[in-house]
Image (cartoon, rainbow, N blue to C red; front, top):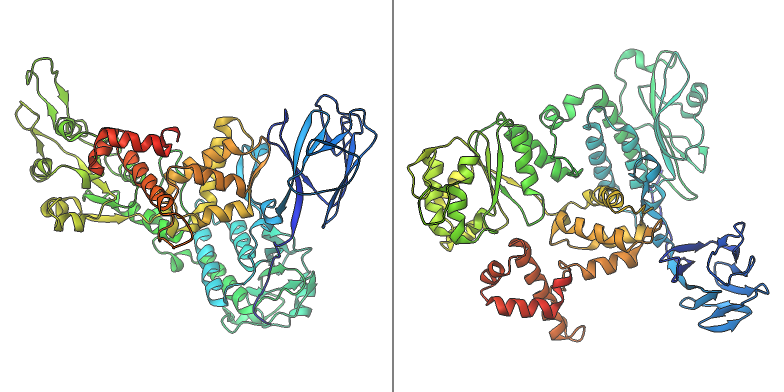
Length: 619
């Protein structure tokens, strides 16, 4: 059979109306057909506003046009403020029924179909809709699809406490653009049964039907493929061999198979499914052969409220965290702002032998340099008039873990003192004798320490002391597989927090989020999703317009990286970059304008004027 090639035409569009009055920003999707508008609850669109008749008007919708017909209502219907009795209405027209007002819109179908749905009846758990995430036009080559399918499968097999077979089958169906897929078992001494399923695949063939249709050498891996609900003659994969001499006997063999269904014209290459099935079988029977490091990370717990990434890049990070937790070696966590470096430091502490001790964190960039020494090392009594004794962070962390965030911004004068504390295991508070401390050192930075060392801004010997092991956290833009899960969990979190039951997010909206570079990483994504929950109508779904508005208004909005003559004005281009730089400086200093101005090497007054001019105060 030929390689799978499935296309989904999202060029077609659908009509919807967006209400503008007392109903708030709610939406009504207008499927082809007749929609009655009025105050009677039996109408497809029921309005409770003043001046609306029981049957006020009807909307006749087809694929190509939308017609409005007033039904002799007492107060009449209007289009763009003018009385209207019957005729075609166009996208952008404002329709009036009594005091109710709405805008007719024409939107792409994939900006209506949900990619992620949140089921609030089950506590707001986000679920992925198979139909909303089908592959777009231009299927990828078999090699890349096979690698992605196997990568998804291995991650599902590693999930604790048991492999996620439903998720594995859903991943396969989504990757191949199928209507549905299932994993089934045909035992020699019983009836066939589903093990996992996603979408619609119809009914399972009996054992006898399977044997007659396939005519394959029997093994516990049997490939079954269907298209348009008709059983095909599946081809035997040369990679799948009988496991023992008895496996060729159809009377005694237990069959494990895949049943897949697609749309007209869908074809599936047997080799891909056979390879998927073989890896699945081996993974279930001998998990250690596929992932010998499984036990190293399956019990890893992230801090409460943190969403774990599912990408292979983040799983590699989690494996390293699990292996390093019990080792007292100092760890240097490297990654851009907002990737979650402190959360990983907390996980290292929670899984270490010091978990009963304190976890003390300090942001070296957020504390003014003149106060940082006292914060780290403490102050003795009687150092100065009116200054009380204070325990430093190193003493507070005794017996536990000290996390030094943004270590690359530590002033050079303090680096030598910190190095001595690392080497000697003691600190000297201002005005007091040295104190012995026993701490686990974890540091983090988003800066390039190699460059800082070359420029003399960071001590090389301190770097070697802190970097017993380097843990590199990839930015969000390099692990797009994590985006849907993060968005779904944040929708759930903020929906509950704000009391807004958002139905989900559309395919096109999720595509817009995936195309954004996310300079602020997961922290920026949380900020944007929270804004999306505010922007979305109650009970509605987040669409691409909401995403564009939320990202454009966010302080981390990324301007174009290259200036193209004629495409934009110079002032607009420079203003976009200035906005990003100022927002990053304020984010790094926790909103402290004095420290942000120092980072930018401008005066505080100049920073304030720029912030006001760019409207950053409101974000």
